[in-house]
Length: 115
Image 1 (spheres, one colour):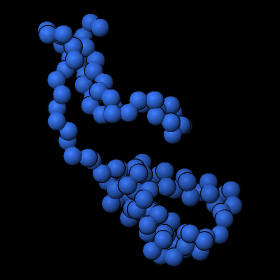
Image 2: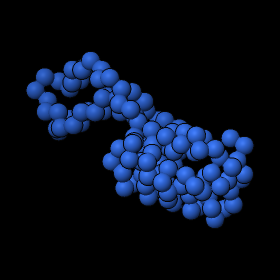
Image 3: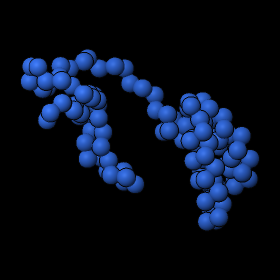
Image 4: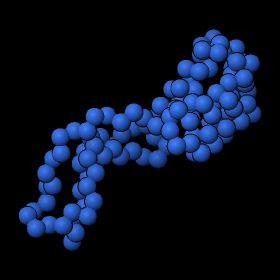
């Protein structure tokens, strides 16, 4: 973006505000508006143009509240006939906390009673 580099204290402040806005919001639009209100002037003070700051806030908002994909065709439970399905999650993704590496992706997680 060609913006100035933030010092550690400013980076910590921006991260904290962003996390607070995301945690207190219920939609991507709410996050985007909140980030623009709280951080827009600061980001512009670091050399970002208004449109760049808005794009950054929008990107953060859509990472926090991704657009849901169209529902896939439902698959049948994999358990034996008569098994009680306690929980079924299609398109399950598993990651280590703090890592960007996916251990499982697009997997169906199914919890059966007694198994």
